[in-house]
Length: 308
Ligand code: GRG
Image 1 (cartoon, rainbow, N blue to C red):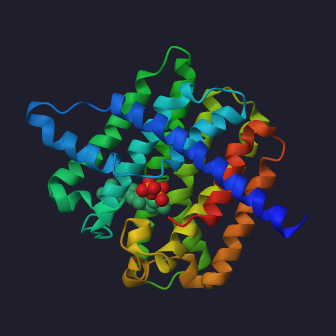
Image 2: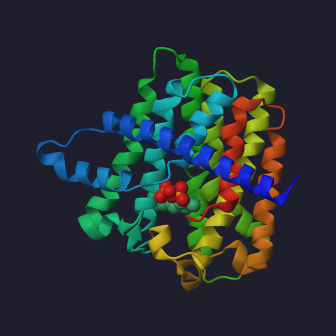
């Protein structure tokens, strides 16, 4: 294939992905607007604080993955919308808490001052708590098309991925490892628990609700694990190579805090190679799927190349 043709294909793919992400992001934003409690009376400040970070311009990668996964197995994106939005609420809660002075102490998030910088620490903690509980409230409501058994199974998987067996466990290990000498096993534990598990469960939840068979589900889980880990390594790299203007959050904080990251352990170039290899593996994990899985393929490639 000529260099020009390759470049054209790359550009086309980029345009298709941007279009796909934009369309799905709009659907998620509209649904979140509908699901979120409206501000009223005494609870107006907490509602404002929840909305502030939720609508601050996140990429919506997790809900989009959830919808793309449902579509890959022949389901509809609409049927997974409440769960996709609930996962985004859980993710947003984790960002609000992660920025607190007692955690990573970051002043910027999604291009704006962090939640606690605007609303104060007390309200920021409560906004995170409220988003987390609201996520489970939304999912437990269920929808007429999805059986209660399936809803319960999805709830179980998401609470496992978000709780101390997953994201919280990873965050604790991350805090404990600050400034310590860590090995690859520890970094992998942190990355897997802190980031990968919520991404994998986003993919699994979409497929489960859409009625995926066991083989498809296993293939998608492997895809989720590879992309999830690649996503966090890319995040480590961006913390070194990007800027606050592009990323919308402070950069260089990993090194400042002595965080356990891939670049700290194996260097930037090797970290980039690992990311690319993980994405290749993720793509081969879903090679059994037809063109309905194309958005999942584009998202995996985007994860390795992302600039924000
Ligand atoms: C319970 C007090 C308390 C704290 C919990 C769970 C937790 C704090 C923090 C989770 C750890 C965390 C924030 C991991 C980082 C994952 C990550 C790469 C976040 C960035 O995700 P993007 O790039 O962000 O998808 P946007 O803004 O685009 O949504």
